[in-house]
Length: 197
Image (cartoon, rainbow, N blue to C red; front, side, top):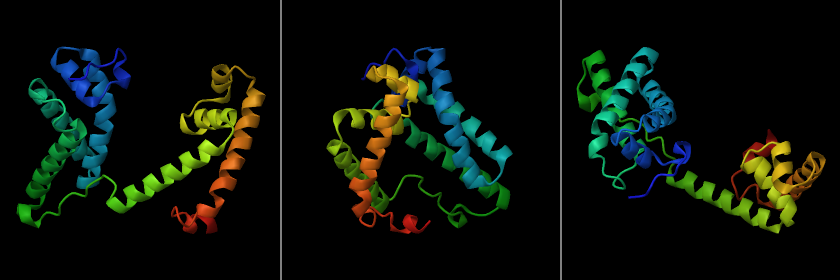
């Protein structure tokens, strides 16, 4: 079993569930804040009714808390289990609402990306990494901190021990270089339609 980090925000869902089962209220709050909006969104898409989606999301979380002491870490992802429970609860509500049989209710859509999308995402990731590797080290660091890690220019300036204007210059030059490096690969990476817009 993986030991959870000291910071619950960076802990995995699995680790937080185990901590909750062991009586840690912070783990429960962190996991609820992380998962409840996603479960609610999934239920809302399946049901089309906000009040019912709230009820389903709360019931799904209650079921998660009830089964936490028996959770076998590493066998399944918490989110996968929770989405399955949510879909089942929604199916039950739809059946009751419409008075139709289970076979007549459409299967819920799988929210995970399909194989083609996964392959394309991987190709885009690899192309970006190849282009980043061609940048000078300081430009690469500034671009990664700004556009991938989402840090502000003053934060980057502290990390890199340079002034904010130097950060602006490095990120601008790095971004232009990335655009030039990736320009010839738009169609290959599936961006041909976006060029017209």
